Image (tube, rainbow over the protein chains, first blue to last red):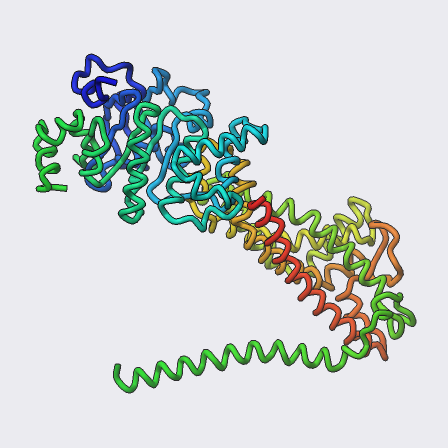
Length: 270
Length: 282
């Protein structure tokens, strides 16, 4: 392999297609905007980091991408989100299969209070895998993908709640990966973990590049710099989250264009 | 901390102990009195023979059968309806919606309605309008109406206490709402369901007024759900109030009732542990 994805990103015209693109995307709760007029393209098979201070709409943005916003009473989404060119907010769009294609990992590991095995088989069965041999194979493959198989293969039937925080988070990632998603959304996946588990999960996320399109919200700028191909800065302006600057990660950190990016990256603000 | 606040603290602690002791003490006093008077009357034959001489002698077998049948009808109707309504209130409609507010308000009012009113309603509606007459079916259905408010409110609280993480996590994996409800929220709500059931069954077993009007008080062994049958509390009431010389058997029956309640209480928590909780760890 000659060109790393990062180099590919340095010249946008060489980008393959955008996996996700948003146009004029706004999110409002009751009367206040969480996010206003967002235009962003997420290249396929890359890792995009979303950074910025708390409360500037990064998590709201992630939730628009798998329509988890539908679950929030009073939440209104306008503008468009296209996944593989298709508007996911068009009427009649299959939301359940959208959420299979766009997996999401939360800040706090949220395994179901079921057995380790059932955490994987329940969503698999829901999305059509019924055959027990196939279920077992997919379970093993997903657990291997996240490096958890050797740690749990002898206790698949014990409760997932007895796993450590880092193991729980990897189980949650395995659960999403088992469904064969195209996109993986991660909402500060390491911030509730101890430094060692955090490093393991970070390596795992870095390994998802190319197989998946990854979007990660993080408050850890060095983490963004280590794993992301492109980085986007969100900021609160006039009471609503807005996108300030998007750039290939190296350029984002070494030659930021916007004043806020400069200040944020240098630690003067945020 | 100064001296007066230490003193206030000690007084408060002392008062709390006194109150707690009074509550527990009262329960044990009742239990002691019941066991002292009634325990000697309990035997295998007391449980397995039919009442004779208006209940002064003989046992309570037909009463136990009628009670179980009434309870069976009551729970068979109340559990599915109650859990369904609770799920609807908690998962399908917004918390502050008008429909939800009205349903909850009616439930609270229903819970406060005196049982004699339920009895009269049951006698007219189930007994006459639907033509079930004085029967175990009428009694069980009337009890179901009485138990529903408690069961629904406790179950709804159980669903609500299930963390939002389960709903979001389930939805983020593309699980249908029914799957989330059945596999994730129901086990999480099982504690609330048990609380509601225990309170409900307690109310049902203790009920006399509503049952006298609906399932009647004949002591013979029922042969179908459309037969009249005497429930255990009605039996105690009748022996104590209307049958001179029935006190000994009234006490013995009361001991059986208390033991039944304890048994049902333990069974309910065991069942949810293994049935609902166990379903989640196959």
